[in-house]
Image 1 (tube, rainbow, N blue to C red):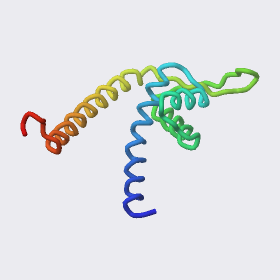
Image 2: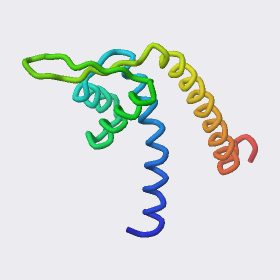
Image 3: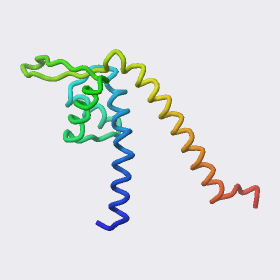
Length: 123
């Protein structure tokens, strides 16, 4: 792997890490167990490996953002996750932050694009 590819991959993973946390929290406004959470995220275009998801769920639970409960379903024990009572407010604040960042980046990209390709009426 070239140095540029390695740099890109590191930056991609860093960008994705924060996005995955936000997506998992948003998805867990409704209770899920790991498999259905992975499936629902994938159906919405966000693939996540088990080796990434389960440590993330454990970390979020340790941080007090999730609560989990073991229950039997389809004759199998499954661990169900949902947002903790306090995390609803934290999620709302994170979503506000995400929207503000996204809007700023869109404005930056739009301005950069205008400098590259001036409007036809200015020529």
